[in-house]
Each structure stands twice: as C-alpha cells, then as structure tokens.
Length: 311
Image (cartoon, rainbow, N blue to C red; front, side, top):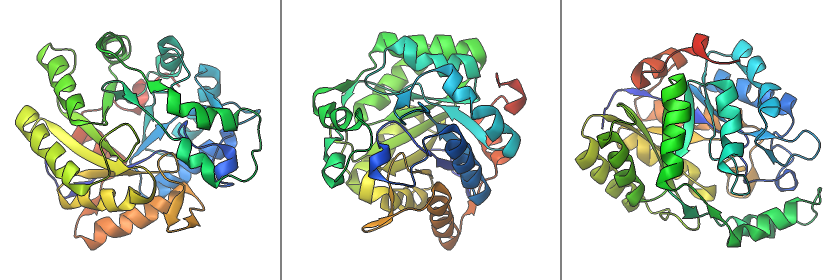
C-alpha cells in the first residue's frame, strides 16, 4: 500500500440504497445534491462519489440529464474531484448505468469488481410511513436481487469509460475475490496503477463488518499490488466511522456519506453529509494525520484534472 500522512476523504452524498422516507436529510433533488456535495467538500472531502435521482420522487436515476442538473454546479462550487457511479442500482441495465459516466467523462468513476447479493431490505424495518409508491417494494425486493457485474461488464466499463475518456476508477471491492479480479485485469493491461481500492464491509451478501477482515484485505492487496495501490474503506450502517478509523490507522483513507450510513451516532440521524465529513476529519487529525486537499488527492491518484471532464 502506498502510505502518506495525507488522508483522502471521499463523501458519497446520496447513493441509490436509502430512500426519502428513511431520512429527511437525504439529498434527492438536484438542488439538495449540489448543496450537500459542496458542503461536504468545504468540510474536507477531496472526492465526491455521486449518484443521480429522479426529481419527481427521489428514486435512483441513470439519466445523464439528471446528473447534469447538479454536476456543473458542483464543479463551479468546489475544487473536489467528482466520481460518477457506474453501479447505479441493481434495477438498471449496464447501458443505463454507463449513461451518466459517458456523458460526464469524469476524473473518477466507481467500478464494482464483481457480482454480489446486495440485500438492504433490513433498512425498511425502521420506516413507519412510505412517502412514495416505489420505495417499499424497491427496498424489500432487494432480498431477491443481485448487483451484477461479470467480467464482460467490467471490461466494458474499463474500455468504454476508462480507456475512452482517461477516467480512473474507485475499485469497489466487497470481498477478497474482487481483489483477484482487479489483479486479473491489471495483468491484462486494462487498468494502470495506482489503483484506488475501496474496501466495502457490512453489506448483507459481501464481506462482514469485522475489522479483522479489513486487515486481511490489506494483506492480500499488498501481496497482489505491492506499493501500486491506495487503500480506502468504509462500512455500511452503524460500523461506518469505526471502519473509517481503522483504515486511517492502517495508513489508508476513508469514505463517509449518507449513501453509506444515515447516522452520525447511535440512533441519531446525521443532519448533513458535511457533519459526517467533519466528524471523520476530527478523527483523522486526532490520529496525527492530515486531510488531503483535492489537488493533493489528484496528484496521489494520477487524475486527469477537472478541466478535462464533460461538464
């Protein structure tokens, strides 16, 4: 793992898992997403991991037009590197999931390194009243869906987004096997170092939220990539900050945001994405490390720069 005293904080403001009924603070309109992203960057996030939503009902959207409602405003309002999801939602086709990234030509895009069961149905148990007709079925039916990326899909994303636009990737690894899949594509010259490996823990269907699993993931990544990768991590739900802290202790980086957890503490909803970034920043600095600026993150990851995107 490449180690530095600088910590890259990524913020994922909205995602496609949580629904409007789960928190009044979840940003879903273009205005809300733009404001949340800019606020997170001002608090210390160097990278913004972004999904789009339908304006009418807050449901996940793959449409380039929905991304373009907020991307230019975020670019104008912050120096942060913008990362567009190619995961979208398990209800979308691959072509749907690539629409936003192909239009935006971002500095970074997320890339799930394999298929997995992605069961978030438990999140619906806390909801007493659903605001929109789509929400309940979307959440409860996640028990029967797979977040799908096979090796053909992965190669398409690497070629059609990475090679075509000079976009680099946040490699989302939900299990140890995903590291080996990344190594396979690196060996075949489809992606180049340094690799930003995002270890994701605590999803029902992926690797569990046990800090020993993070240590194991780093050990395997070291054996596969040596100093050619940068490690970042988060855990879904209540383990979010615990795993961010552990990643920082291991010399890595971390991601927060309402995509990953709606809470700031036990039973306490986060009021904003910036609140989570601020809390993580305090942890980073208390541990004697410094928060990386957007330009420092670009240099560490070899990003092409915000002047070469499509928005």
